[in-house]
Each structure stands twice: as C-alpha cells, then as structure tokens.
Length: 207
Ligand SMILES: [Zn+2]
Image 1 (cartoon, rainbow, N blue to C red):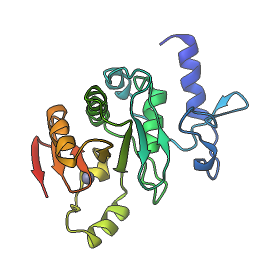
Image 2: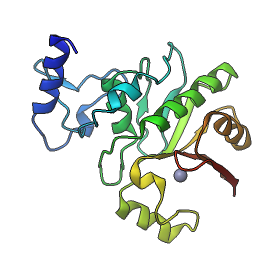
Image 3: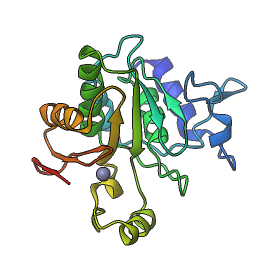
Image 4: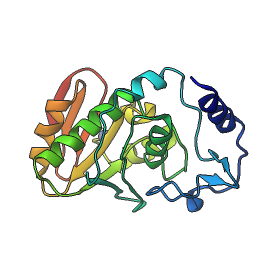
C-alpha cells in the first residue's frame, strides 16, 4: 500500500457519522460520498482486511453493462470497476437491509459470482436492467419475512450477507436460474419472479 492509499484508508476510518446518509448519496456516480474533500463513509461499516485480495478478483466491468436496480428502494447502481474497496462498499450499501437501513459487507465470493452472472447476461444480449429483490437482511427482517412466506429460511444466508435475490430484464426466471447455476459454486434457487443465489454448499432447487 503506498502513502496516498494509506492516507485514504485512514480518512475512511475516521470519517464522522451523520444521521441520515441514504438521501445524501448518489449511487450512480458516488457524489455525496465526499464532503468538503473528506470521504464520508457514514453509511458503511468497515470491510474485513481479507476483502482487499478477494475484491481484486471481481471481474472488470466495462462501460454499458447492466445497471442494478433495487426493486424496493428503486435505487440504481452501475459498477464500472468493482475491483476496489470503494466500489465494493457501494455495492454493500446498495444491498443493505433497506427496511432497517443496516449495512453488512456482502460476501466477496457472492459479489464475484453475481458479477459473473451480470457479465454473461450482457454477453447473451439480455436487457440492461438487473433487478435486485433482496440482499443482506437483519435477523429481525428475515424473521418478519419468514412469518409471511414459507420459502424464507430461519437461518437464511441473507442474514450473513451471503445471498442475493435478483432477476434480469429480457431473461426468463429459468434462463437466469441456469445462468446462475453456471456461475455459482454455492446454492441457486429458482422462483417464479427471481433467482436466489448464495455461497452455501453447492445445490439447486426450483419452487
Ligand atoms: Zn434469497
């Protein structure tokens, strides 16, 4: 790590906390993440050290790749180079538990495999929109959802930031399911309107 990089990380670690960051951050271009020249990471939690190496393995994403759209918050996110801690943290924030506005670092392997799906979907000529239905969930949120939906597991991988539910414009659920299975080393579940992908044991199922 060179000096400027170290200084940048130091600034990240001492950034002040404010009450409500979500309305201040533009996930598209990152504006709002910096104020008065000082990086503000008030909406983020620290990322474990081992993330540095793992994030670098996330494939480079060229311009014009699909844009992530959160099905509930309507926020959008386009990652041009998700191989940096900065981009990883933007993804973590995007995939936060929006109900409780709580951020949890998304598992690096999940991030890498999810972006591999994005890349291949683009190569297949799919639409430019990838709808994210669910990312990280707090235990409280997961339990609340479980009481309404029998498909939600008690000890869901979503609680540990190791699962994502998504759909892709222009591809059927079955096509997304097969695409996810080809990229995932963990679990893939096919549902009527989305596909679940996690970093648990390798397995697949449809509902
Ligand atoms: Zn899921």
